[in-house]
Image (cartoon, rainbow, N blue to C red; front, side, top):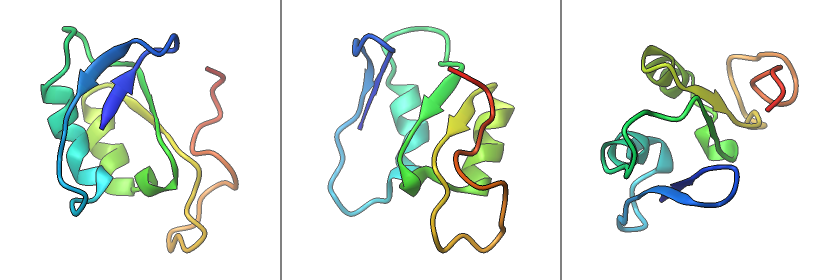
Length: 86
């Protein structure tokens, strides 16, 4: 898993086996970052649509941006989980 800035510069990198789910790897990749401050926003695919992950990141001051999963039980606004422009 890698975290990059808007220019594609790698800010953090973590290598794991293919079996753990990405949501569980977010904390580890943040711990292994190359820069001091955490990013303000994290953009991910549908695999990152997780209310517990959103809450955990919100406590750290990070906004998770990800499209909703089709099988989402707790329905929210359609589309992306944020209304802010990047």
